[in-house]
Image 1 (cartoon, rainbow, N blue to C red):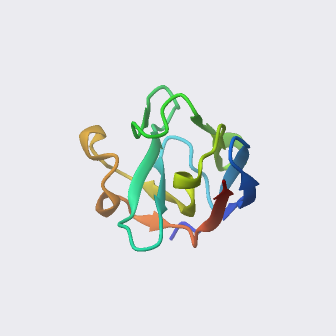
Image 2: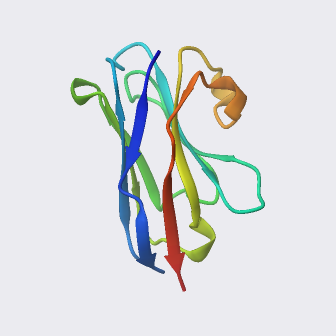
Image 3: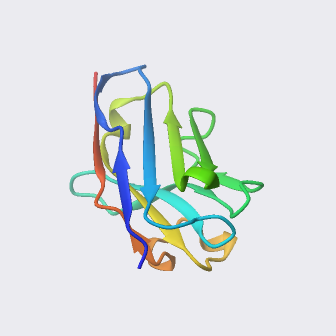
Length: 126
């Protein structure tokens, strides 16, 4: 059982930046593919970004491309999401997730992930 703990959320003004972290309870290297999802009030959970085992492959939702960057440090069992140029529509609870096996074509499908963190709130004010 992998435990994931997100941190780094908070309140930021439009145009600002935040860096989310996701710390895992066990080694992530060469085992888990990682994803970041978010859920705004009244909306479905949506995939934000994905990173492969070795970080050689990354994907982003169209709405965050060019603004968000995903990265991982397997030596620290941690995955990061750098979020720049934040906008009010980025507001929501951000979750990290781990998958032993998820097709790259389904990276944004939350059902493909095995473990989830508890989420961290990101609020962007206008």
